[in-house]
Image (cartoon, rainbow, N blue to C red):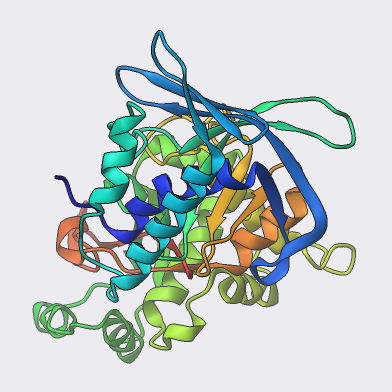
Length: 360
């Protein structure tokens, strides 16, 4: 039987919990439910490589269709197995590592579901048809799942496409380069840059597709992100590594001379737009044309097992969730050749890599 980690087990748990609740609660500040605001779930769709499963509701009976003969099960069965799954997840103390939940797998197999995780190439992890209580329309929307039960997920995954290249303001000799390379902490490398009065000038986003994607946010956004990366790698205080705090520093610096008297939140607005676009489908190595995959937004599995939704319809809540709950993180420096000084056409350069992870 295949083992999964807490984040991976959160996906089938969420499916069972939503079937049990038959409601989608809207999330507000601090992961609380917005009082009295929810969508009734009409249908849930689970996609696998070779088959699709539809869950719909007939009172206290769940109708499951993924073959010629529908399966009918009482909602209590889903309530019981979802509680058991949550207990099993919480019984494992480490947020890392894989483990088995045989009872859950046996139940999923009994309803002809064989794949726990959604396809990794998609941003949406689950598709739900909801009923809007105001308009009574019933849109079918894709949602991305984020869990607080396991290790925080990444928003922007590190890759060669997320490398940013910088030019050194003056040449360093071999001894100075060795001194920098010997430092394990990136912040110590930057202290040596300061020691030798070397500054870094943004050169380019290595991947031209990612660069043009960033220009759809704002023409200056590549440069803004490059400034955030320098702030991050030069910083040695973990609590200061949040997107929100770096954006506030950008605003104070105001390199592009935006009229902050007219709009003091312009830097925050630009960064929030990027976070939303990336959350809904943008990728560093593919041209972005706003073909939203997770067009419903995010479903959060809270630490207590409750499910809340940061809905794309409520864009302010969604933006604030992303903005207030993300931070920069250092990927494998050897894999992406970061902070290794090299020479190109007589100029010394180095690379820094962008990775953004959820705080919880």
